[in-house]
Length: 110
Image 1 (cartoon, rainbow, N blue to C red):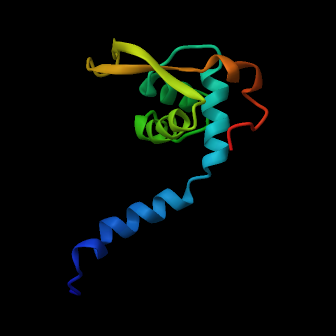
Image 2 (spheres, one colour; image 1 turned 135 degrees about the vertical axis):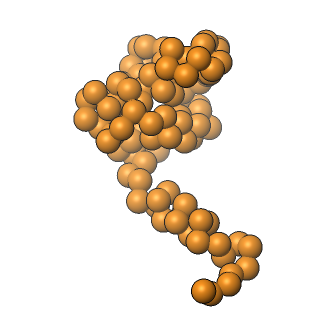
């Protein structure tokens, strides 16, 4: 077995490969379409996206990283906390910021 330095671990490589395979623009569109004028948690959003056939499971990791990116872009914002009906944990609730609600499907988030 080949031994590698810390930053060359296979997990860093596979994580990077997975990150690069995601079509982020398409996922942003799907998230914004599902979120629309609603307030949802990352898990609720992943359940909705699964129902629509956008993602292969209800795992929140399909939505949470993109929600973080959309928050950093100023398009989505966390507006409070609630108890998740799936896990029982306290989680953030998100909504599309007011200025973006009219333009959700106009690709103004790049």
